Image (cartoon, rainbow over all chains, first blue to last red; front, top):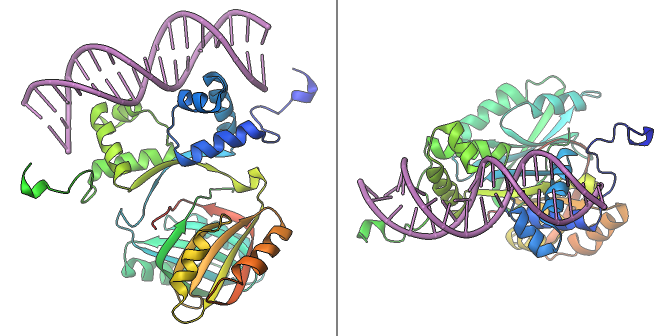
Length: 161
Length: 161
DNA sequence: AATGAAATTTAAACCAT
DNA sequence: ATGGTTTAAATTTCATT
């Protein structure tokens, strides 16, 4: 193997228009067949497959099933803003990411150091989570809860860490 | 058709353990073949297909491609908390949901009336969005921006409205 | 890295229970 | 709503450029 190619593996340096086209199609329907996509875009099916695989392998694209939490019995969503002790923000993020109830954990600048979204079955569940697990996490100084009363738009992000 | 079955169509009244099992598998890999799932769960492939279709038709499950925004050139994420004029919270949600930059729009109780996540290409883009579109939306009184410095966990929710 | 064509596997439609 | 069967279609592998 040539030195220039070492460690490149399935990596994608930069997306081209075809990659973006494939992503756009799969964002609408993650199970569209490669042949369908090939017919729509005019590229050969094997090339479509090759590229989608490369995008998945390199971590740019993920094709997953997404269940509506409200339909599966988890209808208490809340956003929680957290103030941390200085120097603890990242470890707080890591600890909270490990909880099954969190669907969103980010380190932020501004009035909060960390923001997390949590999904609970009911208020009892939320109370236990907040008092016994969020507020007892080392480095958490203060929390502020914003209950989600209506979800108007929930789009997709995904695990970067 | 019997009267009891009218209007049931593809609706799912309540999920059983098999449904939950199928959702769990597809949440990890949205393109797993039905035959694979059938072999793993011990259910016939035709039943797996039937159930997954029903879950999709009834809006409980969605299988989509998710692109990492940071990989596709959108690396400025921010959470924006919004205070609204009394009575305007829902219309603000609707207006902001229509913007392509928003990936998350919820009506909340607590210190903010509305919270939105926005994804922008760069600061110039964010500045334009905030000053020209968010803050000019009718009913928006005050905004507070929390820039996302690190995304530790971004899981999946999806459009309920 | 991308494509084409072959062999293999899977999905879709159908039907019976 | 489930499970089996058949037919059509898609995926995978591999050789080629």
